[in-house]
Length: 489
Image (cartoon, rainbow, N blue to C red; front, side, top):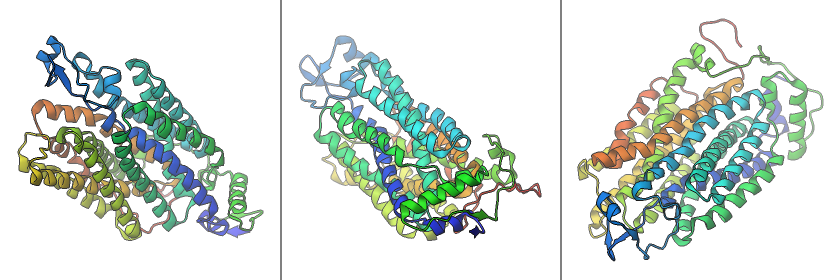
């Protein structure tokens, strides 16, 4: 059987059948674990109330020197209370919050490289095995050093699997379905944010959540990995035509469609044995400036997202933190649902710029309080509602950016370098996430509202959109085309 290109062959065996649905479901399990683990520091690092001579007091240099004790009315047993991360040990909070993202920065770079070199499937399984090992280590941690090392390992592994969820969905699904599935996985992430706020409000011991809602599902996800298979697009990019045929026929068998038997694909990649590295993202003129633009975009999007999440504790008081977490998660999920309905018609470049405008306007909207930040005072209800609205608006704009950027990068980079390119951008973005606790702490030292300082540090995002190129309604590329050369690689 002869096909003009690989997409035609994939359409014949089914690009929206049972195999795609099964793979999507497994990826949703992985995304759910990632979401709950990554977003948990919002609640597991809440500082408790303290008593000085039997009276409630603030944690500062004077009270720490005189001796303070935990307020028995603080019902939560979290990481701060278990490892005594206050007074002279409070600096560990920033380290543990950020070390996950440092692990992700390294893991994203290494695992995305492996994804293009040895294949999507083995890299995905290896990444999730490492992530599960880190999650287990977090649960078993008996001291702060073990917690830091385990958190780094978890971050190192989970980012590789997270990236490859989107890469593989893009490579096995038809055009419209891949857009819906990618947005649905992001929607699952935001739904888990809501679930996380509820869980951490009602379950007072963080280890209970770590065991039953993170570790056990992670192990289940690891067991389901045997149902994940290498994508035919990866084999095709490497010129492994026999494996392309086997992969397509396996999909046909699972989807219940007719096997193709022997196949011929006319449009073959010209340089099948090429090995690409990170420098190739900037070597080719067709990739250079868009890659720089995507770097600026990814850094800003991640900084706003995690900075805004971790900054909730700076503007909320008491149970308001859990309420805001749930409201913002609902706003994020609703935005993903809305985008999923129109994503096939949304120009990528234009809407990325719109997303930054919305987020930054909302960030600077906190100026109505002045530069100095203060926590929500429930007695001043009008002010409370304004701050909740602005925080939600920041997340809505940021959600649009996340939805567009994930699809945009996967659509832009050709198959031979897709995992490498998207992984590199995630690694750059992770440095934005890594920076978030330190940017927030800078704001605390300077007395600046966390959202205002996040806005200032994220102005590079809209600038980055100017360097990108539109990909709406364009097929995924299987070759790298260099404008400065006549040869297609």
